[in-house]
Length: 319
Ligand code: UDP
Ligand code: MG
Image 1 (cartoon, helix red, strand yellow):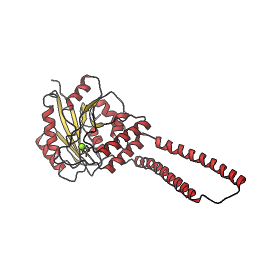
Image 2 (image 1 turned 90 degrees about the vertical axis):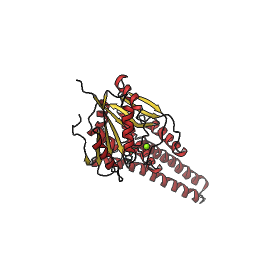
Image 3 (image 1 turned 30 degrees about the vertical axis):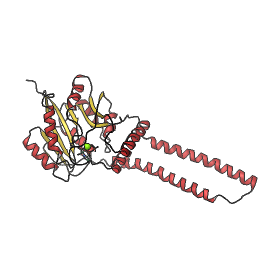
Image 4 (image 1 turned 135 degrees about the vertical axis):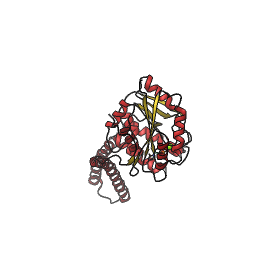
């Protein structure tokens, strides 16, 4: 008899004790019929939760054979959790799904259909609108996508979620990217392949609260830009050239004026303003440079992307 193909669903969890059980039931219920020709394994990656998430997952794993888990030694971030899932689980298809049921499991059917039968390597969910999101957050999110797409060669689709289903080929490609700063949306896009976008209406999370404050999102956006574009460095260099040229003309103008009209001492307030302006600009440029340096620093150290505290995942090392 032919063995069934296997779909691995990777679920990064950080303090999701209330959601994991509901998610498991929901996945099994919605996929029972449409995905019956697939074996389904759910890999919960506990990202150093401080609540009872790991306990809840372990209970699930005792009750259900198709539940595996990897638990990190501390919080390494969602991106690290996704990477760990890809690296450790063995399957023919891989899906990434949030624990909070904001990624509706019923989309898996469509995604699987696209990858299995329509010649796509990946089917990814995309928010049809930003309804329900705070206005300011939506505004800045929109600007972020505009900026990053204007200055980066890798296209980052507005509204794209990490929720997606991929074949082994694409997962292997993503695993090839071993960088420490993992901006998943960018990595998934960078590897290319044929991607089908499936729009859906946003849903609220079932339990718990979002782990993303505005500040965290801002830093994440900055990381994304720095990881996928060197344009800020070019802009800074260009600005430097422009200001230098401007000051050369300024010097020539002042010398000429002094020679022709003498030297009336005036205009020190404007001098102070110009000095502070240039000083601020220099700090900004240094800051941008520093950000790139910090990224290089983190990469050069070559630290592991995650560390495992305990796991029950079968150690068939992936290809
Ligand atoms: N998550 C994680 N590590 C973190 C933060 C979040 O594994 O440091 C997980 C979280 O448990 C959830 C998913 O990533 O399954 C998305 O997080 P969240 O719902 O807070 O983000 P949002 O949906 O608000 O963008
Ligand atoms: Mg969420």
